Amino acid sequence: MIEAMPQLILLGLVGAAAWLGYKQMARDADKVSERNRQSEAEIRNGAQGTLVRGSDGVYRLRKD
Image (cartoon, rainbow, N blue to C red):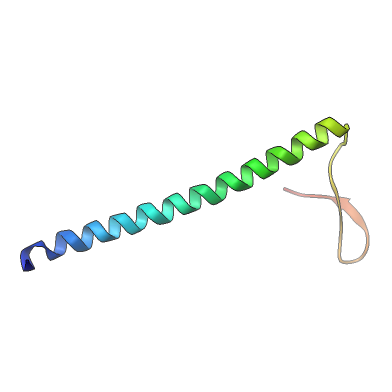
């Protein structure tokens, strides 16, 4: 059992890295799909962009 420990540790590290990579990819995919939905809504409405209200009360174009 002692001889297999380095392989098991390496397998665990590879599995953890794969899981973290998958979670990051899923988060990025959610961001991209939300950005696409917003763009499609702007196209349907004929808008030039989306305004957001800043902390000073002035409306500005949202930056992606």
